[in-house]
Length: 315
Length: 315
Image (tube, rainbow over all chains, first blue to last red; front, side, top):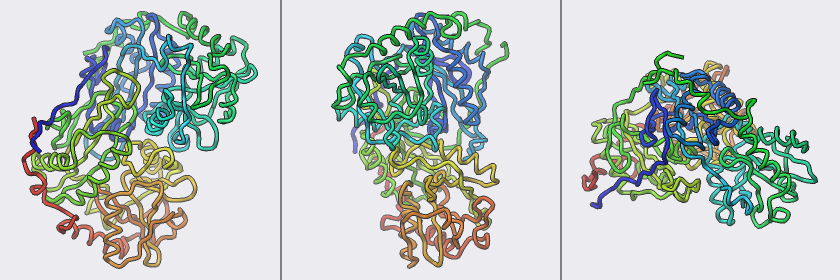
């Protein structure tokens, strides 16, 4: 046992981070292995994106993040306006026109090393990295190939899916199942024959011009919410209700929604081809409306520069 | 918004760590916030303890850790013997006679920043800190006060509980429920009226001289396994089977098992007092046998010095 033990390759994307009250390089954005955000996955987060220099649905992401922290009984060290400004300053530091901005609060560590989460000092972290895609625009015509895993999503009675969380082992193992079926990513059921969600995305089905998406046991995604608002504007009927796996396979159109790529046509589900195997008409209309909304005001988008007022006194 | 934003208090226990191929101070044992071990809780771990300079059940912990990594399709950068030696060298660096030694493997990060877990370089981390107790020896007579939370444990179909994991939000929120009931910690059910486990411990009930513990939907704890072996030696009937909440409340004795404290009498469950409210006879006999086993050889315990052969070439 004399071979040299070497350090694993470490690679970081370009970007900027904010951790422990300071701005930092992405490579320096590290948390203690003792932080309960890691050792108990006791954390919540949110991801807002910036497109062409504007935050998209920032208020909705901040609303959900503040609500999630409260549901987990965590105390954020910064107020909502401070957090918004930290996110904006992060984006300005990167100079990115398009970015993926993540805000996180972890339970932290107990100064007394007790096992009691009430003793912990909660930790706020944020970082901005290049905009990420589940499905790249040039792949949009081809669409997303998904597969339904046998693994059911963690049930909402155990972990509240509306509190955006890192409990992803079911989704990760589902991804391995999907790869074996030749798919790009997975979709999990609720174990009772209904569709839930996939790794980082919500799912919608279209049948006879009507759109449906699961309401229970899923993250109430901001892109999901935006899509429902836009479908209403397009006067396309949309309902939140249980969606069975049978309906998924029988759908005229299927699409997924995520901050990481927006509205994505799903063209195959395992060996099954969705309708013609091409993105559907309603999906395409929604994709158009979704990207058009990125330049709208009234709560839809806001310039990063308008959020960053440069008044936050940071070390 | 001009107040100074300050860094949260950072406190670390004494100890030693091994991360990215090197030994390090506990305060320097940090992982990137981009590591999927954090962002997806895509990790597995094990904790072995050292008592009076001897590892307890080291082989059992290493067996489970290697098996868990394989189930998650992770590649450990070190072999079993190397890992054992790293753990032993960690303990020697601390000089602790009694220690809590944790080994972890995370999915790591993808050098290409893809979303595919198969692209990630898995990361091995280990650390040794002072021995931790859920129930301190001086509290043993008083026993552990637990409360059953309404939150069901994450079901085994979603996340395999035999792969020791950090999906703890159900347990953490259950702890908040328990505090409100005046208890020290929580016990979760399976949502169908059966007992599962608590934060870091398995549960056993004793009725008419017979001992039972849940088999399904729980971690197969090493202290649980050791307790079953010792009960057999004590010729106390022990069975693994579903244990209902009714049986829990009707038990003559209840005890919990964990590496963090060993065998712990449970004397109250919410407002209910277990039997006389004192540790039971079988529980006390098992506690005696459990600590006596810490000086036994034949797979029960091994001196740290015998594991650390000082031949591992580490930076």
